[in-house]
Amino acid sequence: MTKPQYGDLVDTAEAWLGKIPVTWKSFYAKRIFQQMRIPSKSGDIQLTASQKYGVIPQTLFMKLEDQKVALAIKGTEGFKRVQKNDFIISLRSFQGGIEVCHYDGCVSPAYVAFRMGMRGTVSYFAYLFKSQPFIARLQSLTDGMRDGKMVSFEEFGGILLPFPDYLEQRQVVAYLNRETSKIDRLIAKQERLIELLQEKRQAVISRAVTKGIDPNVKMKDSGVEWLGEVPEHWVVTKLKRVVADKLAYGANESPQDFTADSFRYIRITDISADGQLNDDDKKFLPRNIGIEYQLSVNDVLLARSGGTVGKSFIFSGAEEHCCYAGYLIKCTLDEAKCLPPFFKLFTETSNYWEYISGSQIKSTIENVSAEKYGNMWLPLPPIEEQKKIQHSVDKKISRIRNLIITSEKALMLLKEHRQALISAAVTGKIDVRELVTDEEVAALDAEPEELPSEVETATYMTEEEQG
Image 1 (cartoon, rainbow, N blue to C red):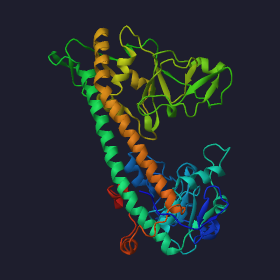
Image 2: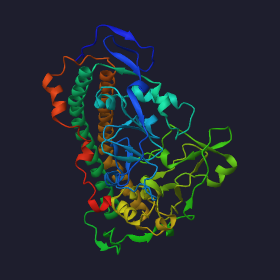
Image 3: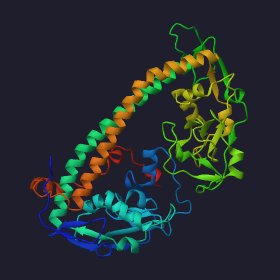
């Protein structure tokens, strides 16, 4: 359905903002907001800025993401005190926008903190600062700079922002709260469908790769707790016994741009969640370095560190000269014992991931060493049976794969629609005044601002953890 639009518009002369309703004002951000430099106090909770949850306590973030975050070992002296509804510019703001603070506490001195200095609606600007046109404007401030460029308050202050009157800001918020909640429910359902499909895919792979495809085969105890029973005629052996060369770490070199004689430099970030190679941001190494870490067809790369530890990729040889980075481990298999595609399937089983989870060193960052990979047990059928299992699995998961692809496209469209709706509403491209009721606007006062659903359902830290 076509959304109503404003009749009279005025050009702001700002490319990211374009024309806004003639009844709206526009101010530079430095007039609407004031930078906050209040020193932290003893007992202030340490907060962290995240694109997913906004600004929340670090302990809560660790629980939600099941990962460790570096806490301030020497205390929070020198940190900045902030309060709920302040805004934070972080090192990642140029990628995902500016975050709103959901708690009172303190933040790293590296962050830029600011709050409303004019009468306005925090939620309106929370939507605006996460809209795609605004994010693109932030990115223009960091053009030509590498990751890690912090947007200063002075740079932010020079951005022209739309400023509808107070009532209209609230009308925009009421409209977006209602409409995005509808889209969010559809997104949640689509994400759950994808999750179920992925679980089904993994179950099919796990069953075939660890139990075989003959339902009548005799089984035996593998002697490995996380592996369970395997077919009686299979061999259970360690990975290091079926490799052609020792498991090898990649190059610890800084990526470079392309030159005529360079090698494609494959990093963890180049490998997608489904084990495919992304080509969006190719990097390279000089030939004299890259050749020491050159990949051959059917080499398997295993991620050893970080949040993607355990992720795997099989090199097809589509690009002739490729090498790999230090956070990856190269596994060259003896194909008379273990076929690379069969091993790649094994790395997608629930059994494999149980081993990875139990093998990680989590004192600082998740890590599975080459030694731990080498000592991993493998259930190995004869070579011909490995081929049959691979063929059977490919056939069974083909339909599941297609359903996942279709669902992911639908999910992407929902997210794009959500972003487009927000961008249109906060910049005056649609007129929402007749699309909301007075009761919906009044309800903004009756109900306090809620945190994202992931935060609402999380178990917050105990008093002991706070201490």
